[in-house]
Image 1 (tube, helix red, strand yellow):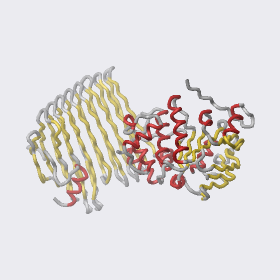
Image 2 (cartoon, rainbow over the protein chains, first blue to last red; image 1 turned 180 degrees about the vertical axis):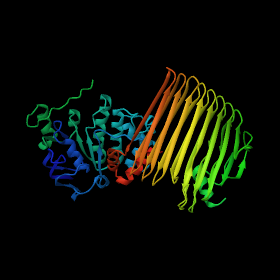
Image 3 (cartoon, rainbow over the protein chains, first blue to last red; image 1 turned 45 degrees about the horizontal axis):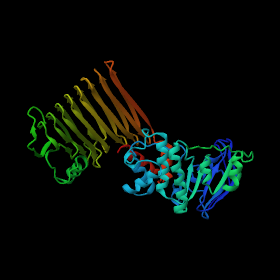
Length: 242
Length: 305
């Protein structure tokens, strides 16, 4: 169980309050999609969970332990992974290196094939490539997701994983999230606007203007979103594949 | 061979108790050991201290080692080595250098290497520099490399200096004939009060010749680096020079890549990027469980790999 209790966060130097007294309990083994309009606080909330942003007030409990004061590294060691919306690039660090760092050990060819295959990349073409500007936005995004898969942690946070992913790979990505849920009972928190991702959620959280507007089972929340419920305040993108 | 020499050789020239093939080990200005092979002859230079290394035409897959060690302060070593690479040969030249001082006196090595690369020949030139010893005497290495490439030849220069050298003044020049290619990969790490200067000057004289000169460096502590690189295109040719540097602590880097195009079809590019390690890079690695220090070390290690 991951619990957020009365979390608030404001921009530095007396700036706007982005997260306003949010409380949320995310049960183990659930796929929770956090959605809502742009600028509503979704990414900030994800960063607070990973320790990248430090809340001004409130508490974060991971399986009962107060991790509010723990930094990014300590939270990663406790089993929280984070896939960035805009992955960074590294000169000299190869895909193989990055995945080994994520896994905490060297990975053999079969393991690398498995990880990269899940995100729609051919291992032979990628393992020795540097994670640098020679990779396209979509390629580096998939490698970012693979780095989280390599960690195999209990809690995985994905910030808009669909951004930059083509339609064909998107289907594979959906399967990755479903598999993660079914195979290792991992908890996934996915920031997304995509209807197909919302469709595989166990629970949906709608955040707007720094507050939780809706939180409940997919069956309850998604129809409201698709109907354009003003309270939910969240236009859902419908990604159509032919 | 004492332990200092042995350690230097192991570090700079992959020495593991012996060299296979042709070699010359230079220690404190003297020849400590030498061996030629059927295809690679190593002879004493007659007009100056140093060697004449002659690789027979068509020699393929052989390596010649010419490491130099300065193992004590107070030694100022100067050597002139000439390498004649026969037509269509494909060989590796390993020419590392280590300087060591345990006292107040400076230890210094000046290696002047000339390469005459024959038609169609390929050379991998590996050069690693290191300074060791706890003495306050400065460890100085000043390598000069002059390269003359004939038609269709390829020379790859892989040069590394990762620690302990107080001052370095490197000068490399190259002249390329038709279809010749040169690839330079420099990796440099300075720390403390170290100073390193690199100066590459490549002249593309022959049609369809090409140069790719890339330097990656890290300046830590209070160290300073100067990087100069000039590619001159006198004909239809391609040239690329790039300097990427990471600054840590109070390190300073001065980079001046430059291009001279003397022909309309000379396609030349230069790039230079200097900055500290991006905070996002450290953050990403921390989300994988690394500490901030481990993340920095990983980024630098990868960058200089």
